[in-house]
Amino acid sequence: MDSWVAGSEPLVTSGSITVVGEALIDLVPAGQEGLFEARPGGSPANVAVGLARLEVPVRLAARIADDVFGRRLRAHQADNGVDLAFAVRAREPTSLAIVSLGPHGGPEYDFRIQGTADWQWSDQELHSGQPRAGLAYRFASSHAAARRDGNTSARRPSPAYGDHFLRPELPSVAHGLA
Image (tube, rainbow, N blue to C red; front, side):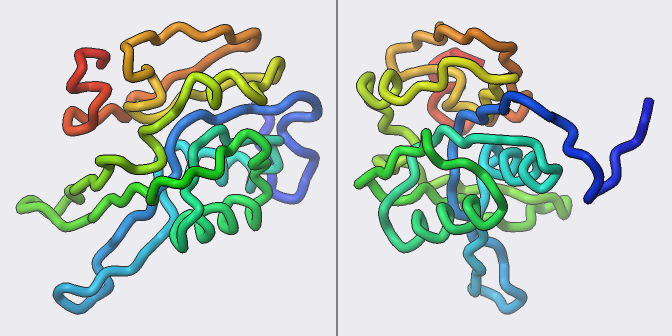
């Protein structure tokens, strides 16, 4: 297998990958007790940025709030070369993940998602501006796997890849969709 070197020919020369899922803000400890730093996050958004940095044409299909955090998320995606043509500008606030160190030294997450942009997809949003063709689709994180009614079917003309990063504390898993 040939290895790819940054700055050489792109890994993908035609088509694009559409990543479907959330873009949220991670509030991470900032060194001093009780202080947090806001960082762009969300597994799908991170995947989109990673692909764009590898010069893979990538789109992010997400609901991104039109608040201060949402504007920061949009800027981060755009600055890294992610196409946001399928990102909905949502009126709900940005989802937050408050990160702390657990008792064994690993990260623990406290998700603030009730009534936030990521979790409010309407049927109209899901069907307007849908990508019709692409190299692949990546449905990432828990909520991208299902709609509120539990319907996980979607017309996908290209290969679809799922995410193993499901969290039991998030709604789609709570609805038995894991």
